[in-house]
Length: 390
Image 1 (cartoon, rainbow, N blue to C red):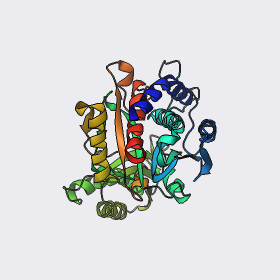
Image 2 (image 1 turned 45 degrees about the vertical axis):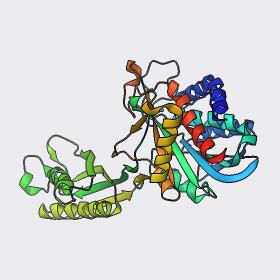
Image 3 (image 1 turned 180 degrees about the horizontal axis):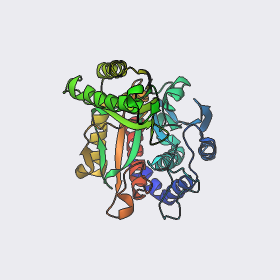
């Protein structure tokens, strides 16, 4: 039966590629994906699925009820784009200035539409129910996953899987990391208030830039000197804004950065240390500071049984050489929210070949991937569906 499904998916391959390219040409930013959501909903309605729109915002659900009762399984794809100018020369490059799919979300959506197409034509083979979750706003905290969960997208679901196309490893490889696979992500900003003045009279001022420089040094020492070295963590400063002229000492400065970790105790400790360092250094210089701290996505933890299931399925259906055990990374994904509620796994599918155009990293202005990976990703979803529901 799985072979029948995958053969049908192959016949839909060009349709999947065309849908991916259409989405790539018409990207929409997080929380603004109204046209993309409408496109997805219309495609699902053509398949005769139960369709729910406006789920937690711009989210879309497609629900497929099999002929016989059984378990309920969910697959998830994301569909938001990034505020990046597409610099590719491909004919399907983005038509929207300053916005592009630079992380493969267009591919994820096209793959899941293709899988829904196949399975909708084989309802009689299915015992149970499939929920196709098309999620908005993965790229921008607070993200779309938590809102979709609150709106009931996981109601009755027993397990969930997501797939991410990756140019970090070759086409034909399928990887997973058991346990802590991706980090939590938090954002912070520190507003420094000093006392401005003439660049030639620094003794009459409180230099907010000097305070900010010391703060950067102090913040970098949180991980190296405060956090248990056996607990992975990152504190990175991404922005430092201050000043209006070369001969004016700035009265205000602003730092912005991110915190990554794998457990809540370390996460809490770093937040506390950032506030403590900011207060202490600012006070020492006669300045004041305000810390704005925003919690983002939790760590993404792949459950052991689901990770084991993926290993076995890959070995059985795609060959022993196809599977790759992946290391944990400090990137973050709001698929993590689903895994705090039910068992599941986040799977990476290799999408890089030896051509130059697929060598660029995610979030790069020339990002692209080998479209043959779409068929492989869809086949992984189908293998999981057969395992659970056939």
